[in-house]
Image (cartoon, rainbow, N blue to C red; front, side, top):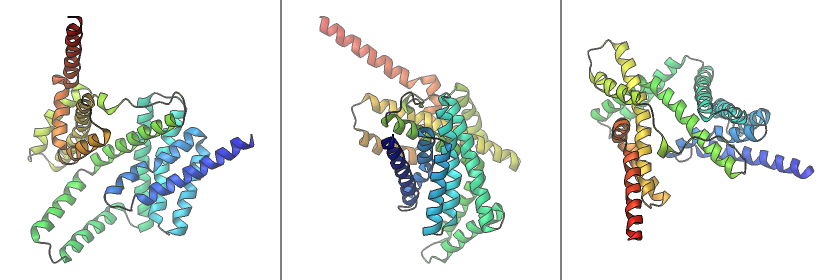
Length: 321
C-alpha cells in the first residue's frame, strides 16, 4: 500500500517537473519553441486522467506559484492557469469514456475558454481594454522597427500589412488555434497514456486517414473567389475572409493527410518524413489546401490503395505461374 502511495507522489512530482520544463522551454528558442505552448495542458491532462481533477488543478497552481515566485512574471502565471483548463476538460472527457469526437469538441470549447481567460488576465494585468493594449503593442512594434537604421519604408509597409492581416483574420485564427490546441493535446495525451499501459484510451484516427465532408470543399471553391472580390461592405468582407481562412485550414489538414498517406506507402524513415512535411506545411500550405479540396472527388488514397491491391494480385499470379 505504501509503495503505491510513494509511486503516486513520485508521479505527481514528475508531472509537475514535466509542466515546468514545457513552460520554461516554450520561450527559450524563440520563435521555434513557441509550439511547446500548445503542449502546456498535456501534464494536467495526464494527471486528471490518471488520478482526478484535484491533482491536476494542484499541479497547475504549484507551477503558477513557481513562476510567480522565481520569475515574478504574471503573464506566465495567467498562461499556465488558463491552459490548465484545456487539460482538465480533455482529461475528464477521456476519463468519462466519451467518443473521440465528443472529447475533441470539449477540448475545443475548453481552448476557447482558455483564450478568453488569457484575454481577461492580460486586461486585468495591464489595466486597460484588450483593444487598447493590442493597438499600443502594434504601434510599439512599428515604432521599434522604424528606429532601426537598416529598415526601409518597404519593410515597414510589409509589417503594417502583416499586422492588418492578423487583425482582420483574428477570429478565424482563434477558432483554428482552439482546434489545434485541443487536437494536439488529445493526440499526445492518448499516445502517452497508452505507453504508460493504460487500456482502452480514446484516440483520434491517424492523420493519414483524416477526411472531411465534401461540402467543405464546395464551400472552399465558393469562398475562394469571393474573398478576392473587394466590392463587399467591410463587415461582409471580413466574415467571408475569416470563413475562407477556417475552411482552407481544415482542407490543408486533409491535404497533409493525403501527403502522409503517400509517404507511408514508401519506406521512408520518420525523421525524413518530418523534414519533407514541415517545409511543405509552412511554405506551401496553399498546395496542401488545393490537394485537400480536390480529395473528395479525386480520392487519391483510394486510388493508391487500389493500385497496391492490383500489384499484390499480379505478384500472386506470377508466383502461381
